[in-house]
Image 1 (tube, rainbow, N blue to C red):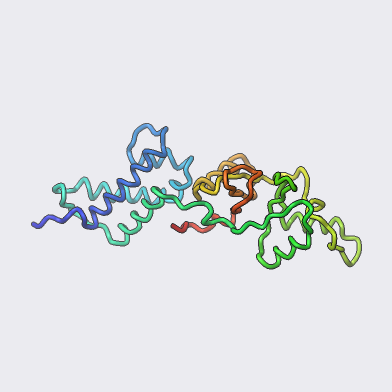
Image 2: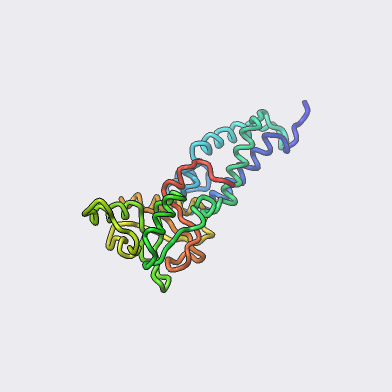
Length: 241
């Protein structure tokens, strides 16, 4: 019986599986042991990338055990996974080793405004680009808050006293709601998509709705925004590589 080369489908599968296993060992530090499934069971609570692929990885662990434990010789596997399965586990291994950056899912460029900007300019951006959240800064580039389309509608409702609302000289600072419970977080533009997902999860576990994560050069809130991620931006289950 001819031996199959370890470059075959089973060999490729095992290599990809081991790549993921190494990443799990680096990520998950509080597991009782380094077994693949134990790392999954422990790590999914704190790592969104594990949660994203958890079900598939459980199935891959079963397949890996069936392949490797029934290996007749070092280079001979008794079973071969489908090409699609190998391609999928290699794709996931790539995501573990080099997660997509959050900027790939962010709205860019960012439309942000200073407090003395005119509200009518914000409305033009909403109409043309359908953005609904805008970081607002002081003239000293200090972050002041997040202006949303909901804020604008509520402001208009309060101001409505006739058939016409004049917006000609209304500044953004007049519309920005003070002391509202809008939660916004900041991360570096080098943050991964999964790090941002974890921020949203952290706020959710505290019963707080994170409206947006703003990406800046160094992760500081008073730095120029490079991208904005809202919960809607995270709905795509498959990030781009």
